[in-house]
Length: 322
Image (cartoon, rainbow, N blue to C red; front, side, top):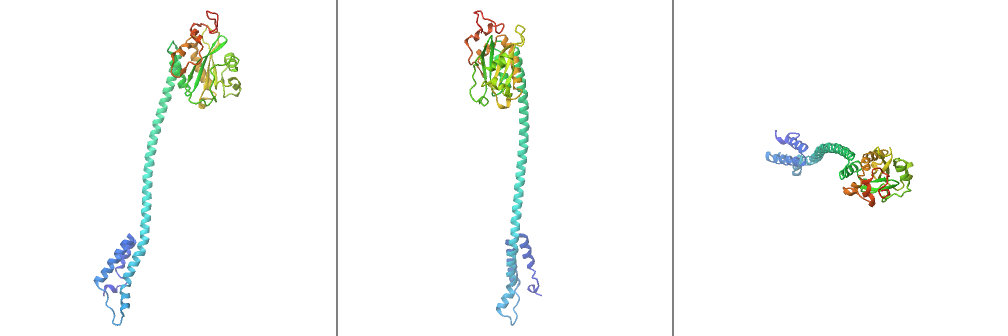
């Protein structure tokens, strides 16, 4: 029996397998090799009465079908292979993206931990510096406590403007201003340093010894364009009448996150530590020191006589007050 007489032809096997497995190119190659193999092995002999064209059709029908089947099945397989490659590429991209996100998350976590440590260390350091500055204010000496005052106000009230006033008899004198404010967001304009004698703020803070703050609507008439909060500075020495007001600490400008119900309490802490230095007549040392951030604004010439005061409100040798 001849190979060409076997039905189906054995060459169908490689053509179908290669087309289904590897696509169009491999299928066409297999079909071409099968055709060449058929010719080399030998084509079947024509019958005695068979016409020439009938013989050609009978002989070349299967080779042509090999080519057509290779192209048809190979095209479908090629599409599957292309889709498979796209899915593999997408999977690889997703894997690489996941690895990148994992690295980024790891680095971000490490950075967050580092920032948390820095914040914790900074807060501890600021708290220690604030306590040290307040302690220095208690042990004030000429030319030494201005730096402590500057440090206490800078740490306790960052980005703020705070003014200090002294009570000299019946007068309230603007002594100095600590300026660290960037934007006057809370004031709406410049804060006047001098306060007229009839201002309700003096009656509330100096006269009645009360602390006022804008968070309390009842205190708005007392402040009236003079900042956001103010607290009295009480005398602590036995030589002065108990609870006598010897000065005033006024917050001209404060960031919004520092304005709350505890604003006056924080100012009162600084005011309490300022009281001993004021009673010793050392306020003029602050104005003369030129410490960074502390500005001597509007100090009257008689401030040099402050050191002569033993009791606030007492008369000077020339019979005048301050």
